[in-house]
Image (cartoon, rainbow, N blue to C red):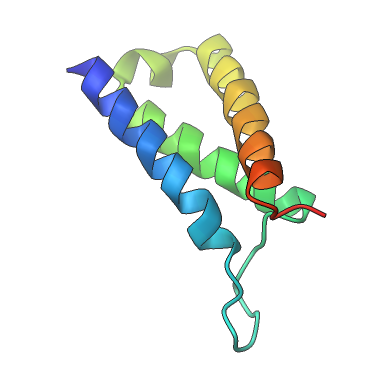
Length: 87
């Protein structure tokens, strides 16, 4: 079950990077792009929060949260570079 949940979260993260990086066409109030440090940190924070809500063992361990943050940050940066969100 945990493997399935992790797979679903990974797919959502893969899909959410290009969607969150799209230009809204209107005003940019409240939209954080992945071209900034703030955008990548907010995405990593979102991913770690959702994963820790699903797996209680992660919520109790600070070391696991740090590890997931590092992996999520590297993955988000890589995907943003891959999809051309970062110049």
